[in-house]
Length: 187
Ligand code: DGI
Ligand code: FE
Ligand code: FE
Ligand code: FE
Image (cartoon, rainbow, N blue to C red):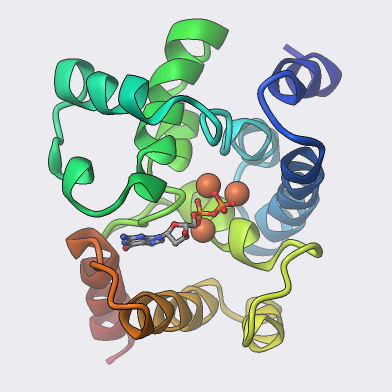
């Protein structure tokens, strides 16, 4: 599957706004892959499909977690998390991609996980800093991303965890574990 075919598939599943976000994630993933030595072709495909399930029916996704996925913990931390693991499932099942590294980059793009692969880190960070993102603090993360993948991800996680806590939302345990893991590695 080439880039155009992949983009045509994903476009059918997204709003215009989310499709433009996806194009930004693709561009930034390629840039980060080249800067930090990840596989550029895999980064591109993972980025194209990372939000494939963003607009899927929530009940359908909960059913997928219950019936098809090993880790059920996604059900307990807010519906926003579902599109990442379910996206990986649908991209395999419906699009036929079965490269484990690409599927994992989709699966973990929202929460991260300790011991993220280089490809997972690239897509996770690109999702946060692509040019269309306007979050408070995103420019600091963009600056860090010029130098260190891990430092940029630590800052992105700090921002996201703080954002969730300010709103009294639950923080997914692996999001915190990712943060702890990266901090520990620095010392
Ligand atoms: O899908 P995108 O909007 O491009 O970005 P994303 O996949 O990073 O999803 C962002 C959403 O996920 C946002 O509403 C915050 C939420 N989120 C991220 N980490 C966590 C989280 N929600 C919970 N409950 N816990 C988390 O650790
Ligand atoms: Fe997402
Ligand atoms: Fe994200
Ligand atoms: Fe995204």
